[in-house]
Amino acid sequence: MDYQKCSSVYGVCALIVISLSGCGSSSESVVPPVSDKPDVVDPPVVVEPPPVVVEPPPAVKPVSEMTALHQQVEHYIDNTTQWFTDQQLDCTVENEQRHALCEPVQVKFSDGHFSAPRVDSRQTILVLDSGMELQSVLRYRSRIRATYRYDAQAQRFVEGDPSITISGIGKKLLSELDQFMFTAPEQTEPRPGFIPAAWLADLAKVYTSKVPGDAVDYESQIPHVSHGTMVLGYLAEHNPEAEFVLLDTAQFLPFALHKDLVCDKAANALLAKMQTAADSLTSDVIQQHGVEFINFSGGYTQGHVRNIFNKHCEGQLTEQEGKALLLAVKPIYDAMFAAPNTLGVQSGILKIQGANEHSNALDALSYPHRTTVYTYTSAQQDTPLDLSGQANWRSVFNDYAEQFEGHDFIDLFINFGIEGWLNPDVTNSTPKMQSDVFGMRYAHEWELHSSWAAPVATSYAVYLQSVQQQQDENWAFSPAFIKAQMVPSLCPAKPEDTDKIKAYVRQSEACRIQDPLKFRADELNRLKYLDF
Image 1 (cartoon, one colour):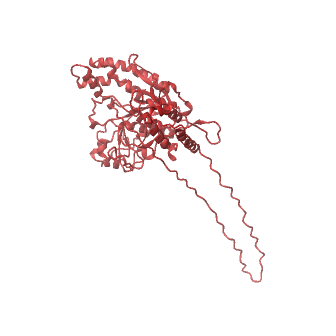
Image 2 (cartoon, helix red, strand yellow):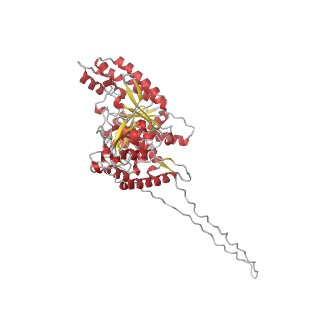
Image 3 (cartoon, one colour):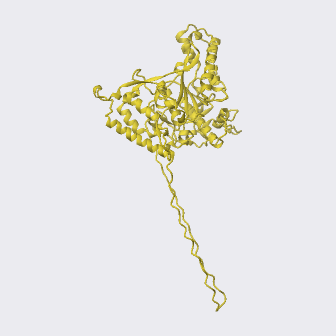
């Protein structure tokens, strides 16, 4: 898969405005009656004084659980910052003056453990990506149920044990953030608390300035920031109660691992191997962990087939032969996107980028539980869309028509609300946000990339699930229902529409132009972590 890497971001902060309102009361004066009979004295009218109403003192609003968590995190940040000072932790100084915690240590996935009390088992997300080691081993370790790699000899997905080499300071700090405990109001026992990146900007400045070497793995010298950390980082931050299962796609390269079959153009033999792998994906991964959501910010194309053939094989590969080899991977897609109880989200590709039914045969397939996603941006403008994508979608289509060219393989377009890397400071009021590799800084995105759109859509799906569960506690998970909520069939063509609009509208009348970020439709916002 062709992945891009992205630099880290810087944190931002938010302001809470609390308003109080009061109420008052008024009374009417009592006027005694006037007699119309002369020389007759009416008895005095006794006017009872109004009762004295003693207003109870205003109730003291209890400290919310989220406020208590935030206060205790602030206390932790102050203490940890002071710890850096007291211990003279500065890994930029000469070796003989460095603190022992500056020394690199190896940390394995198996050194940590999954913590069920930190997560909602109804939000299990399978992430297929690469380069997720730092976040899976340390920063979000307690929310990772398992990691998997592909064993080409066994043709199965087996549990892996990824590792990283990081400073002792990094190990301690990131583990503490992952395993943070706090005491809720009127409780005595500590309980797990999620710390979002948006709260940690000040601590991040101290850590990254004093331990800059933690940006790369000390052994491999490979930067920790990667395609996978951009994806997993977004999912872990915007779904604070989700649990994860990770599959390393860097070790699942169907054509490279079976290049002999590619050279022989043995599509049926490759198909048999991929069917065995798909059966393992279903039983050993998806069913084993009860996966509800799949995020696949990648894909396989005929380009991957040709790269292996041109590098290792002799002769020519026709388009039909390349397509047959590509479709040998279809069982994997079937396992992900045709599973009865799982909703899959995959980053898509536009046809104007050279994609067609042959080169991208897997993208052209129709799956009941797959949503392919791409980006568009309104730059500094806020869109007039509603949450369903029904209201004013024609206006958005016409304003940004060039961004929807080649839309055939895309089920859902998501607005990022950014200008892009040429002008990274220009955004609308609700741009796509991103945390850094350490989950300690939070700022708006600066790159338009379909890979980054998939986790936004997955987070939107989790949000829709939570809203539905709030409305009906007996609701049973339904990927078809959530997909219908994500892209409702409310956007038909009209006779007076232009030919371009008529060509865009699908027979399903799906509302494919969406802006969930405008409505902050993710769990991080719904649970009010960003209210501080």
